[in-house]
Amino acid sequence: MGFVKEFKEFAFKGNVVDLAVGVIIGGAFGAIVKSLVDDVITPLLLTPALKAAGAENIKELAWNGVTYGNFLSSVISFLVLAFVLFWLIKVANKLNKKPEAAPAGPSSTDQLLMEIRDELKKKA
Image (cartoon, rainbow, N blue to C red):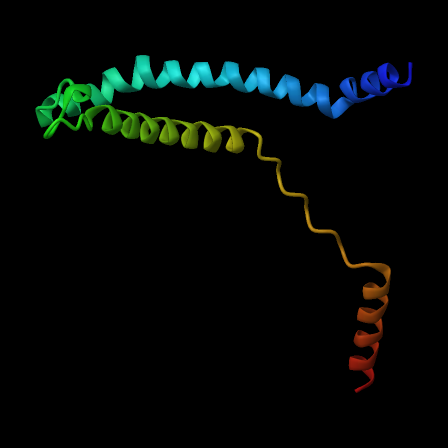
């Protein structure tokens, strides 16, 4: 029974469960961001830009049998996704920003030294 007990302790440690929850939430968040990029950002921004450039169907671009269109499409999708994630994280950090604490006053030792300094100035 030592093996079962040891496995149970490992599997139900807080950090293992937290990691599993993080992976599941990360996958769901990835789907949300992918949908945002594919269904909102691309039709609004990328598709008009590609039409203006004359490359409406970028995945079919080829040169001497090398279909570089798929690679180019993946690179563009990555850049758009990275840009959207950057702004989402930036907004989230701004919303979660905690107000800075007021600086603490001088310590008792510092206060005592300042009083001594002031007394010495008076005598000089």
